[in-house]
Length: 122
Figure 1 (cartoon, rainbow, N blue to C red):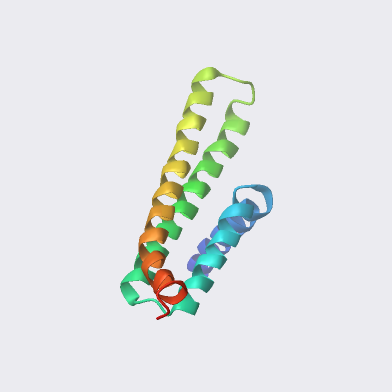
Figure 2 (cartoon, rainbow, N blue to C red):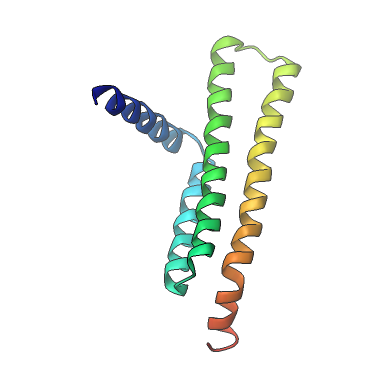
């Protein structure tokens, strides 16, 4: 059991470090809180929650992987190399694609219920 506890402790430490040091999390976390609050307020169906949770998890995971790549590069190759720069750009593009997908999922999952409440009066 101690082994599992240590794994969770290391993962929690990594998440805390990313949240404290990465500006992107200052966008992702508040947006996630707003989306969850909106979903709760709208009392969305289970399938909508599943889509939102998956999309949010994918964005956060992509951001964490991108952050870990950046950290490793700083240690292994602290000087600028255009090839490493391209690799970092590709990792950042992964976060961008995941974020665009999450926005799309959010619009599909939250748009109709929000429309019903705000516009259609239902």
